[in-house]
Length: 314
Image (cartoon, rainbow, N blue to C red; front, side, top):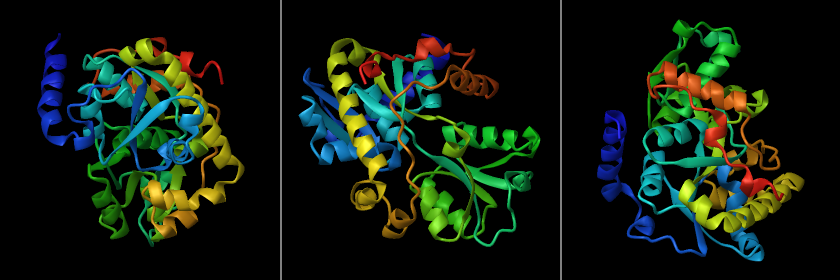
């Protein structure tokens, strides 16, 4: 194990004991159960619906959804072996592999991330944000999203000013109070910002940018592939239900996905697509970005990061 991998592993071990939720501590994953780490957000909505409507049971698989409040908690539980898989992002998958924890991306999840500007702002385009602070966590999928969208808008790299604000609620309040010109946000924070006067300048689904993913450990893919295939069948049934009558699930956004009532009413549903892998060029782009940031030593080949077997039968 290299020095960087060793440091990464030690940090995760130290974090795990104190921050893994009680539901995931001292837990051996049984052979007949899939444990999936999720956030209460729009990415997870089809899984939350499948749980509520017992679609997993109908497909003959026992799925436990473990809800987490932060990526650190979720990742620590995963590294500790308390999860088979989790909703994550392309960059986190690469960093996990680089840290010595083998995972495979099995599909995109159709999540949404975006860039918003403060209420009352006269900024109308991404180009207008050149040279102005944009609140985000550094070296994260949100940071990457901002860089990609700003580059596509023709903004030079040295004019993209990231203001580091890791905690999402603080980032949202800073945006709404005008303490930052812009902010990178996922759902439901993006819609919450919009309902409170902020303007969304760009969102990933408008650009065809797939970043949110479902991934599983290589161990679980080896030992539980039939169960993962059944999970995907239930997921796709739930996703199609939402696509058919999205307004029927606004209350589910409030009850299970962390949306306020106003945000649920204003939310623009994503159109969930049949589970598919990220495009190789999207993985290559994210990999190259991590290399430029010094977070991985060399690019990661797309084929080494993905496994299409769980979705082939859909």
